[in-house]
Amino acid sequence: MLARMTRNAPRRLWLLPAILLVAAACSALEPQAAPPTVTLVPRSTATPLPSETPPPAPTQTPGATLTPEPSETPPPSPTPARSGLIDAVRSVNLRSGPGVSYGALAALQPGERVILLAQDEDASWQQVQLADSRVGWVAASLIVEAGEPAGELPVIDVESVRATATAIAAGDSALAESAAVAAEGPGETAGGGALRTGVDVLAYCDDAEHGFPPPESLVAGSTIDVWWTWFASTRAQVEDHLAHAIYEVTVDGEPLNDWRDYRLPPERNDDGNTYVYWYVRYGPLEAGDHRITYRLTWSEAISDGYRRFGPGTDTTQESGSCSFRVLPAGG
Image (cartoon, rainbow, N blue to C red; front, side, top):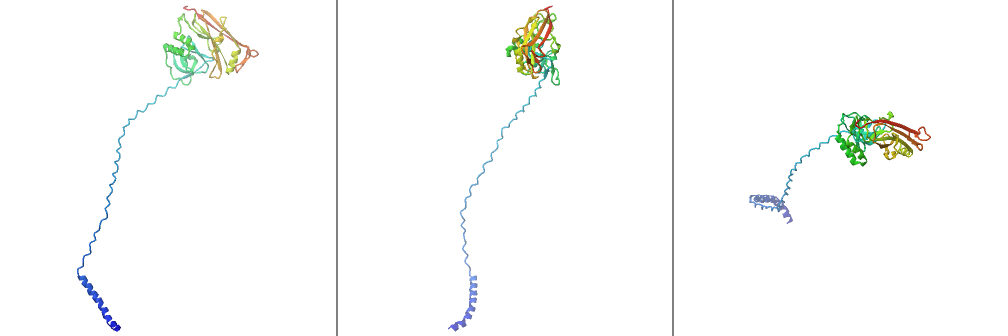
């Protein structure tokens, strides 16, 4: 049986491919069923998020048009003050008006600086201002301008002088008398002279070295202020002088015994020295020749910082005189 199977096996094996081939051909000839159509189920469509509408760009409101403020025109530079120096050997009077008939307000020292403000009509007197703001008049010949002269000073009239004198008096009662003299004017002219009040006369004016000549053109009824001064390098030395000085001053032989009551406070000057002044009122004067005598001694030796004075020193006294004439009123 096994043998039969073996003998017949080749034939069957040969036939098998043919059968398979025929079957394949038949299968190819038969209509094939169409494959099922695969329907794609769409995935859930994502609803798109609404796009964010960008906020409108802020419309730039045009700013208020700024009108530029007009630039400030810088004020003109102030004209520098003109100044001068007192050009004299001794002290010079600051007067309340342009003339020797006006009262003295202060004594200015040689080399002292003043501000030049104005001048009178004939430029013989200049109105000046001191460092302490006091205003007065000084003879133009006793002032030298500092630096290059800048032309003529403004001219001021007498009415302005009187107003200035009144203002000075209002600010300082001690100057009231001098201001009153200024307000009255230079005085009444009579017979080539003038009736004047408080004319400053240096007690030793006969010595021309001091630079203060005797008064001229005075008429009977005028009054004078007899003045003198002392200075030292320190205030203490001035005080020492005041404690030991003995002044013997006379007008026509009449002693001025109250001279201590007319002393001004000591003041330090720009030259570094300390000065003290006396102004003693005298008058009214009669017509004729007049003479002032001056003598200074000390009860003890003193020093002014440069020399020694008094008993036991080379200078035991100082003396001088001043001679002048007074004209008759109306003569």
